[in-house]
Amino acid sequence: MIYRSKAPLRIGLAGGGTDVSPYSDMYGGAILNATISLYARAAIEPIKENKVIFESADRKELLTCDAVFPLPIDGKLDLLKGVINRVAKDYGIPSGFRLTTFVDAPAGSGLGTSSTLVVAVLGAFAEWLKLPLGEYDMAHLAYMIEREDLKQAGGKQDQYAATFGGVNFMEFYNNDKVIVNPLRIKEKYLDELENNLVLYYTSTSRLSSSIISEQQKNVNEKKEASIEAMHHLKEQAVMMKEALLRGTIDKIGDILDYGFQHKKNMAKGISNSQLDDIYEAAKRAGASGGKISGAGGGGFMIFYCPGNSRYSVVDALQAFGGQVKRYHFTHNGINTWCI
Image (cartoon, rainbow, N blue to C red):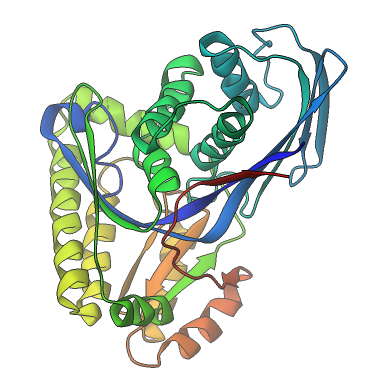
């Protein structure tokens, strides 16, 4: 048998960074995101040998270990090992297996690839071992693996986006309390947003943990400019929710721009001269606003292009050597099956 799963990546539309502790613990966070038709995929094949065979197909990495748990966290496919170690500890793993993974976007690209991959691997184990994990359970477990077990800095939104799917307004509080509010948006509003929102890969990646660590440090040290910026981003999430539900779609460019200007005050390195040049070129070509996806520093950017301006914006972006990525919004979160 092969046990498979796929979990969708996400575009963060508003509130990015307010899901990160300690801000969310102290003030409460709010994020609006939407899953898209790019995925993290995992497949588990039980084998007779007492081995764990890893194949990260997108990264062209192959690794074989003895199936003796916990596996060593040594810099080699640690994210996958972290999931396996937690599953082995909490539920037990009955045999050796081959784990094959593939992600449709590069690591460090700002679409939540790492957390979505963790969810996908958890989903494959849940399918194989019949684990009793609902959406909240799986998202929380994925969060604990990354933040507690592996000590990787980051927020909470990606795990919940990957498990629930769709367009969600998420609230984050202390004691790891998360409330996911699915938004019932008219299909024509989503179609218009999808048509007008250009997803652009800058052909650079970044280590989000370093930016997030500085953001956390700024909150802990009560740096007023950084905390005030996060307050504005939380407000942006509410503005975005209202625009989507009411169908005032052309306000979204201004709302994105509002958030982008404030986000740059959260921590150093969120933007840089190259990203600022790309942003200004897109605006000159007709975009009314945009943002860097994820923590910042590189990866994907999104631009809202009202009317039919997307074509001139796409032309303008070609000068920077990146790639416009086609996508669709998706309604479903993680999906698992076996064959």
